Length: 80
Image 1 (tube, one colour):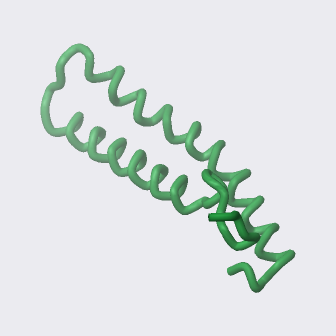
Image 2 (tube, one colour):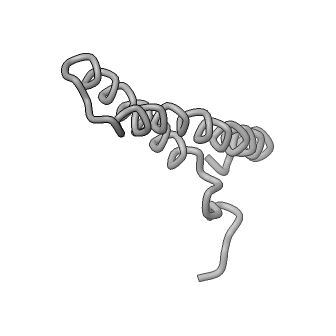
């Protein structure tokens, strides 16, 4: 099927990145709650800090994708 101007390119849609950010944030908050409730194994700080470290990485991806998407919508409102 040929690409049309309205066909989103892979990774051009910020909703997938936004969902990833929500899942990462939810997992990090759940991990923090678990950490407060019970003692954790020795490897737990790596998991906990890894989840929080993924959040800015995902945000760094989402911000330019969302900006490009908004710019495209401003240029062509019919594409929405």
